[in-house]
Image (cartoon, rainbow, N blue to C red):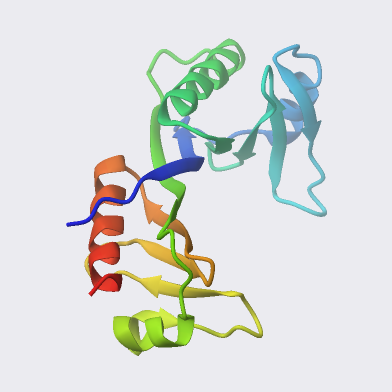
Length: 184
């Protein structure tokens, strides 16, 4: 297999508090917390509470179901740090004794084939049943890896964006397999 270097550009994950959340009350309380930069709760527009946590402005969305989603961090370590900061605030407010479950759900990574790509030819090479390419709607070929949950967007410049996987090893494997198919 041929290795492709990749860079994590976004980590998306969630925390579960195992109880329903009163979003209006949380919004009021969050506005008084110094750990939270901004709070937006407009139930007529969105059914979730939007926040940005200090010090880096990480986006955390809270849902009535008791879950919150975290996005906009660029490493698993940073995700775990944000989980700790969010849990510290929530522990003060909800006074729970358990450790909330958290999980990285998706890593968004970029990579490069280092050569320009003819996307129509690539769609035929990879198999039209695994590819979507409609340049009038989106400038990249979308490849759905049949062996994993990876979705790889390929741009004519050779740049790649891979989503759908949650660990480095799976991403490395999917990108290496993709690179081997393309280099045939």
